[in-house]
Length: 131
Image 1 (tube, rainbow, N blue to C red):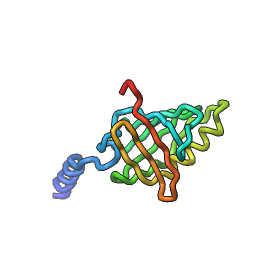
Image 2 (cartoon, rainbow, N blue to C red; image 1 turned 180 degrees about the vertical axis):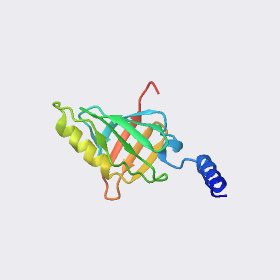
Image 3 (cartoon, one colour; image 1 turned 90 degrees about the vertical axis):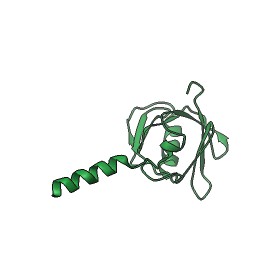
Image 4 (cartoon, rainbow, N blue to C red; image 1 turned 30 degrees about the vertical axis):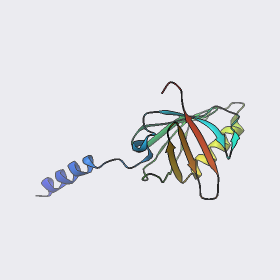
């Protein structure tokens, strides 16, 4: 009896629709950081949503990944897993990773992805042209 109940609940959970930003236009695409709080960002950053519940990316120095399981339009990246290579853009990377870890909202608007927090911090990404 318990085995049948477990299998039924497992099958139902597999059928649940993904409600993260992945399913609202961000998934399986590469987003490039363009601006932080309205100013151009001085280093290259790429953000990807390779599958539901997951983010990955390349900062100015290191690769990063995290879970992202909250429903759209909410956003929560964490905990961040980051490789630890040194490079000249370490300060820009630290700034980006700090901001990314604090983002609360996501909005996909065509070829733009905007991550923001209530107090005004904002990361604006554009879709990589080859996506």
